[in-house]
Length: 281
Ligand code: DHB
Ligand code: FE
Image (cartoon, rainbow, N blue to C red; front, side, top):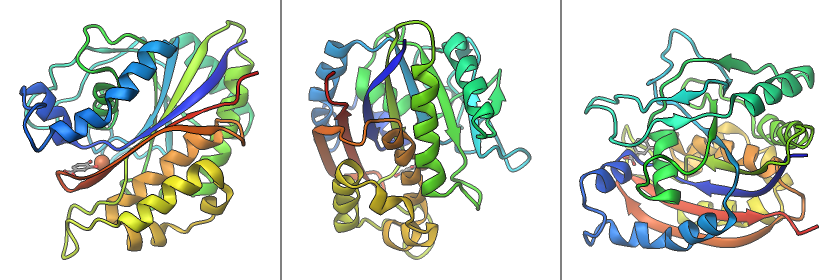
């Protein structure tokens, strides 16, 4: 049987991808960011997951205001990097895992989560930057990835509670797959940031720290947080953090934090990062 054994939370910022792609990772502004992920690269190289389920949001790259799926599951064999205005990132095409993805689609939909099934999709910085942070610059990517794209761009996004319960359904779906795959789930986006309006540049370290603490130890205290509180406390793009609750819901209640990193600034965003592991059997 397949099993989700760990979760990774990480922010995404397009400029992090650009820094890596343009050879600026060692510059003083960026070095602390990449140094903060060095232990994580070692951790994931050591754990060697068979599949990554990557919860992320699209930024009007694959979807637009014409079609806005709340939860879209990538069932394709591959997902090319999207052109976000400066050409596609020079990163490998992301290989999917259609067998597990289709199994998840069946399990989740029959479990009453109405997923959108996606058979053709380009993936933007929301997906490729977390891969770059965790794996560096390999070619090809070392692991198949199942993209799970969540609408946090156009109101209304899903509630934190719905995300957390979807995580629990994902755990069940993976556990009922017949092959013995070892799976890591990523929850991405966040932390505090606002890209527009008078509050552009907003960072709230106290809110972020409390969110990181509670995500591991007391996620129930986060699941009923209304959207307006994310926006008020963490900025308009801080709402991306609801996606981290999908990752948390897919882990054991007593999952343990094994690594944390927090750094300001990276472009307009507070970079937050956690690795959580389920207790060993
Ligand atoms: C930035 C952050 C994001 O989450 C994003 O999608 C785009 C830009 C930033 O901080 O620059
Ligand atoms: Fe974003």
